[in-house]
Length: 457
Ligand SMILES: *[C@@H]1O[C@H](CO)[C@@H](O)[C@H](O)[C@H]1NC(C)=O
Ligand SMILES: *[C@@H]1O[C@H](CO)[C@@H](O)[C@H](O)[C@H]1NC(C)=O
Ligand SMILES: *[C@@H]1O[C@H](CO)[C@@H](O)[C@H](O)[C@H]1NC(C)=O
Ligand SMILES: *[C@@H]1O[C@H](CO)[C@@H](O)[C@H](O)[C@H]1NC(C)=O
Ligand SMILES: *[C@@H]1O[C@H](CO)[C@@H](O)[C@H](O)[C@H]1NC(C)=O
Ligand SMILES: *[C@@H]1O[C@H](CO)[C@@H](O)[C@H](O)[C@H]1NC(C)=O
Image (tube, rainbow, N blue to C red; front, top):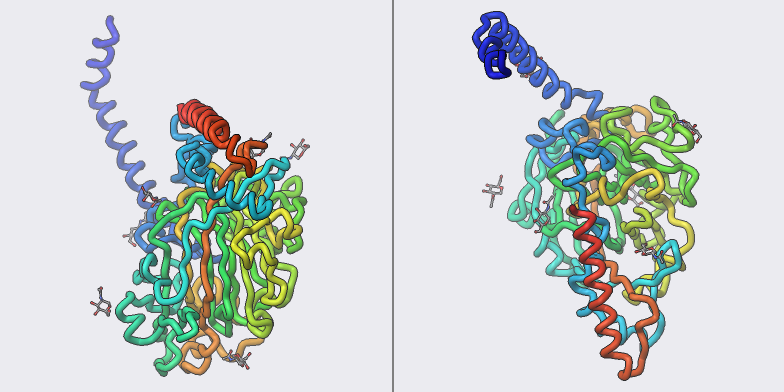
């Protein structure tokens, strides 16, 4: 009997036909049950921030490509050089910038291993043009907020977005409409049209939204949530006073709670899923999608006290050394940051950081758009309402527009910097070294390209 005969015999057997039909049927039922399971309350309890409802329905960490290390998935892996823009494509072009700055002063930042680099300003969102490169999200809120996200023309018409004469950008909830019990309030959710893999993201605010029933966030993710990760940079609910920084990922990424940061790991992430060897699981499929979070230490990092200080800057640095968040009150903003020559290595320990030691950052975080939103009640602010000093219920709180006077983003700017490596000791003020500088840069670029290529292979 040849293998072909075997095949023929198998395929013509009625029993085989029955077996296959039954298996397919079971599979169909399972797929459906699985689909339904991915949108249960359990999954949504703590701030799932999926991109839109359709995607929230389909996506689940279990659908993500397994983490690197699985040999069968190696071809999907992208090289670190590629991911962090270190592939040598533009370094030669940056040399002039590097050189000019070097002539003025040494505005270098440093990697964990002491090698130097620069932050080059890539995008500025501010003033009248703030919304030019932003897309408006007007779907149903995937976090089940009692909110109507309006489109740009509606937002302008209802003055939910506008720019003040001094250039301050306002983005706010409807603060004028009385609503019947159970009705949803108009608000805004926007995201950058462009996506970023790594960078330094600097948000300067006069105010961030707060108040009972209010749940704002400044965060990043993309349409492949949770496979490409989520970074919640500024987020809170109700009368909170501590900002919460949180990461949500596919399985296999952990927060090293023993890393150096000034905040406190979020206890709710730990309750049902205690730290193993000092790490907290960031997997969006465990612990009700609590993610791995850190509360900022300062009680003025969110809400009324943040506002009273005149607001300040929150900065998120995302590179191969970690994803770190710092916040600075208005009168404590470092000069280098104000001067657009940030040197994060001089800022001291961050409020929160996700280190690469327990999470392959290049794998779990890619191509994020930057998002601002203000939602109400829903899977975080709704279920925690009764734990606060807030009056009544979240639904009754929604009715009076006066309750939303502080649900406002007042933004000076959002600046995004790109990391530019500096190739050791090739920078010098004298023109005699210029050509050798360029040659070495090209050499390094080619080497980077080759290494990137090898990694992709
Ligand atoms: C999944 O949900 C759909 C619609 O809500 C329902 O028709 C279907 O029976 C559910 N499937 C299972 C297996 O529970
Ligand atoms: C130092 O770290 C950077 C990444 O942060 C890396 O690109 C560079 O190759 C490292 N240099 C040395 C000498 O280890
Ligand atoms: C914006 O929303 C309003 C109200 O829902 C709708 O009438 C209008 O057509 C929308 N505009 C665009 C450009 O989608
Ligand atoms: C990010 O932007 C690039 C370039 O526009 C685009 O090709 C890519 O699909 C975007 N990624 C995501 C996740 O949207
Ligand atoms: C915790 O760390 C110890 C020592 O490194 C190791 O033997 C153990 O397997 C780890 N436990 C888990 C659950 O990873
Ligand atoms: C809004 O902020 C002001 C100033 O901090 C405060 O007095 C007021 O109670 C706040 N209102 C609401 C509804 O949160």
